[in-house]
Image 1: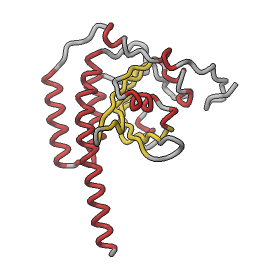
Image 2: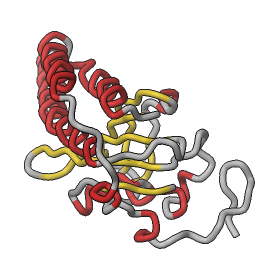
Image 3: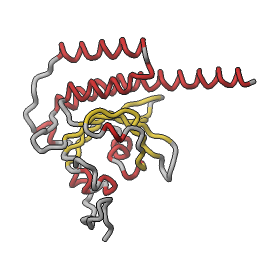
Image 4: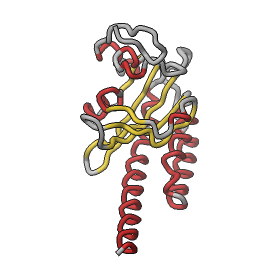
Length: 207
């Protein structure tokens, strides 16, 4: 039996359908939307994107942390690497903020399943299936993820974590993350274009 990063033997890996609980979002009581707060947050993000686009992903996850009342929020983007690609934590807010820029193989992350299915997904204790998450401190009780797109295909996720069983995500959290994911898509494409332009200028100067 394999051991986790703490040296404790791992339990047998649970099937994916045992940790996927997305249907709970429709069953749980959902708090009413606060459209005024959401509009203020989106306006602030639009201003930040115009003034300092390189900071927008971090501002976006800070906004998600507040609107969703989550314990940790983040943005993961798929990059080349490993066998099927790796997800890099491009922005993180909350308890896992020290993990900024960490990477995890696509097949070892819930983000991989989200991109495969191109859908909003909710996981309960995802480390039961994604065993690379065993030993994360604090542990993950629930993980809500939404894909965002570029060029018509999913390229990353906006996600929120609950580290306590007292916090349960609902349909309003999924709606808010979906709203922010559309913003993330625009921000991702803008940042990609800026990096390409900077690379082009650097090449011209080199020549």
